[in-house]
Length: 491
Image (cartoon, rainbow, N blue to C red; front, side, top):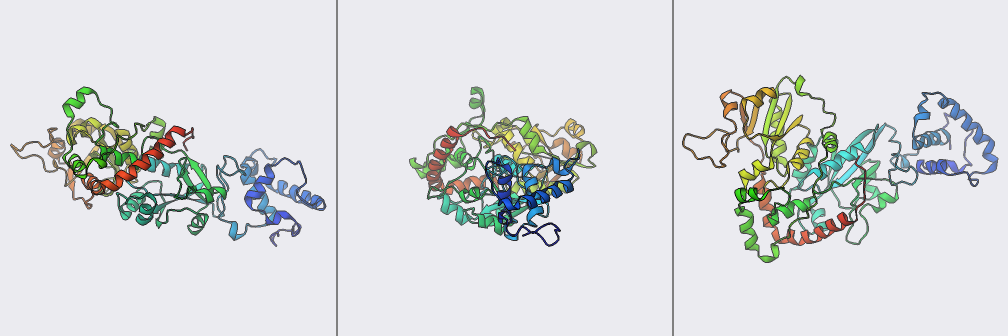
């Protein structure tokens, strides 16, 4: 029935009383081909509607109601006629999959905020993860979004995928907390995403890429929330996935890097750790080269990742510069960047070229291309900007041009203290910090995390047989998705 505060007739006999927001929206969108309310209510309903439209000032050129979307108009009309929405329906929301609202998002909760849930394993976090998080927030333009990142537990993931995660649960949670688009992290979640989970977390809608996963029974993981009109589909980021990254490590492939034959002759060398272990685990552990689908780093996507950062180099009081590789962005990187940010009010991160890392570390590195690494860095809330293809040497010209007050590196950097006289250069690239050190601008920080690229590689090698079996199934799924995918606009 109508709220007691409404002076107009109470619609206790009307089917409208029991309608949800979705039903009212659907009713409003239908053509009046048949009667849907008792004829005896016509006069009273017409009077109520006239009063409503008069009160909304819909005729005014700048009327708020006139500019509202259909779903918002339906919500306002339903509230006017039926009173405040019942508590049991208050967390309902629609999405682009809802037949009631087409491609439009539904009206947010009464507090004016839309709570959005994006669940995932978030293992070996990459540009695809970060782009999904960014799109989950951007998919509801003009609304005050609270983005909840839901992390499946280690046990749930291993049961569902048949292999343990590479990153531990607390490492994955910490990475999400450092993401600039995430407001809350819900950890230790089950693998399934039912409507009850959305309600328990107080979320209106779930978001996922257009590669909707399936469970062992063959049912879709999001079938229930999709049927309830509470699922928003966003574009899956092409050419990057945890499966591809594990495949690159296990297969020793550098197909993800674009090389000339001369580069291969001059720079090619095997990585002792991975290739030795691959021979130890036997022929079965050899994995085929990963798919050759590439991340397509358009400038528009880079701009979306850069976003509306408040800081500007020209107005910064103290610019901090932190150059590095940033391959397989992990918790150790996040903690270092948080430390570096404390040396000033603007953190500029330098990302070395693929060729530089190639020369420094060997044939199969980096595992991620420059643009993949750049997107990961831009997703970190401690970073203000990134210098793409940063030069190996931090020159005086670089310091002046970018107004850099301090250069920060980690204690684990082999060049942190410089090279002693007569000491051989382990990488053959020269000390990158000579000028910064001579100018008194170099700061060396003690890292607070033992996780490194080598540790990640060792974890994968330790479970080589398990990951090999997992890879076979996952690569089939990747192939199927890429062969049948259709265009989805990026939010």
